[in-house]
Each structure stands twice: as C-alpha cells, then as structure tokens.
Length: 364
Image 1 (tube, rainbow, N blue to C red):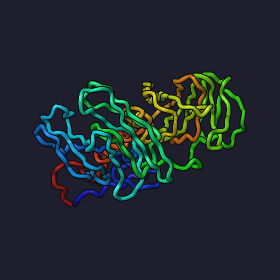
Image 2: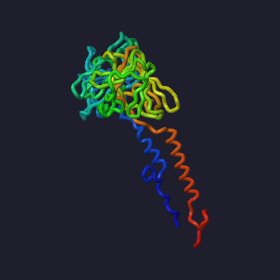
Image 3: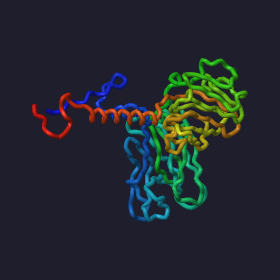
Image 4: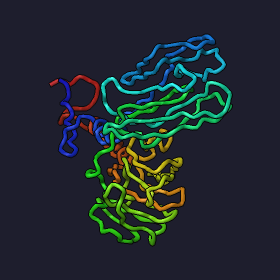
C-alpha cells in the first residue's frame, strides 16, 4: 500500500504542490523587455574580397535594404573580426532598416567599423516614428581604427524605419519591442502638484523624491504641458520607496530651458552597492533603454535609491516616472528554503499511525 500523496501547499490562496513553483511565481516579475541583438555572423567567407549579398538582407523580422549590400571576407585588410555589412557606394549610400511585420521598434545601439585607415568618419542616423515624426543624430568614428566602435543612442523609440547614411560597416544592432506607456499610467507624474512649490521632498504614489539642493527644487511646467520636478544648476534628485526595494521602468528628464544636455543615473542595489551609468543625452527612457544606460546590465532592478544627476551644469526637470515595488531577493530565497525544509520534514515525519516507518513489509 503506497503512502498518501502530500497535500498541496496553499500560498496566497493558490494550491502549490512544489515550493519551487512558489519561488518561480514570485520571481516572474523580474522578466525584462524583449531585446533583439542583430549580428551578421552568418556572413562569412575566408577570402580577401568584397562579397555581395544583393539589395536586401533579412534577420528575423528585421529587414536591411540598400542599393547593394556587401561584407568583407576574413582575409581582407578591412575585415573587422566578424560579419558586418556595408553599402555599395563609397559616396554614402543609405541602409534602411524596417520590419516585415510592420511593427514599431526601438533602437538603442550599434557597432560601426571603418573601411580603411583614413580620416575620421561620420555615420548619419535618421529614424521615422509611427506618428510620422523624425529623430536624427550622427556617430563620429575615430580615424585610423579598424576595430568596431560601439555607440549608444537615446530617443530612437517607436520607429517604423531607420536609415544609416555612410559607407562604413554596420554590426551588432540592439533593438527592442518595448514602447513607453502613456503618461497617464506613470507612477509619479506630478500633475496634481502645485506649480512653484519648493520643498525639501516630494511624495506621490508611495515614492519619495528629494534633492541635495532642496532650495532649488520646484514643481514646474514641462515642454509637453504637464508638470515635473525641477532642480536648479547641478543639483541631483533622489528617488526612493519608503526604504523598500523597487524596479525603475522609465522616466523623462529634460533641460529647464529646453536645451540639449547630459545626465547620468546612479542606482543603489539591495546590498548597498552603487552602479553609475555613462552620461547620456537628456530625453525619455523606457526599460529597455535603461539596459543601455548600464551597458546591458539590469542594475535598475532591486534598488533602494535612484539618483538622477545632471552632468552639464544646467537645471533639469524630471517627469513621468515608472516604477514598481519588488520583493527582496534574499526574502524570496529565505522563503524558498523554509518551504523546502518544511516539505522535507513532512516527508520524514509523515507516516500512518500504528505502523513503523522502515523498509520492511508491513503485514496486517
């Protein structure tokens, strides 16, 4: 006669037959937005030639179109170490990126490699958004270097097409599907705050914001006719969640004067370790763009503090912050260990009354 089956664990009203399932459910919220890194490693040839691949190259849902696309063989002097594409004309042909599905996308980074050891090169970028608006910038390559040079980009969100203008090699593009949620869904949006209010701290939605220069902090109108929290000069703004862990999912940060500028983000994780991003242009950042801030590392998860630091000396306005509370990883691990221990104890001690728990046969 086999022993009875162990009863399921009941946690938050759910019947769980495995403690590990509980841990899996609790940690499901740590999933990241889908990020697609497109490389051209399948384009390989051990020759020293320019290898043509036609006018179109397809990688998953992403399509690269030009008047002619080429890649260098592995023995060519300009081979960058892995597969990379470049346009046909030395006069600066355009490579256009779009999706066969027509779905909008975000663009975050790319590697560019020069085709010779000449002067510095410039690659132009121009994106067309789903609403018809345009975004553009350029990447200035260091001259005399053949190895790939990595560039990160902000503001290339919700695109339907992306154009690269230049005659150098393109590789390792970072895209994502995540589109920032509407401002009305922001965790902290400041729209109910009184304009001009100056305070040492501001609270909304369970989150607190403070500044190292509170005398210069105030509620201001933003460029999109909403409200934001501004700080003058080189002041910083700190975001916390009542001493609890949270996950930063997005935000907008702009100059008080509508000018271009740079900022960096400093986050403090559960262990007290600080992680500082590179300096990036002021603008709107979604969760996948936060990964780019920290070189692909998800340092914006499980944090106790996020500090927005202006690195160009001009006042900035912070608006539309997206964040969610997160359980402590240590707590999740402890709960998992306790549940597994209880399960093992149950298995050891559970037996039928009047019967000896051993491996001998029991006769009635």
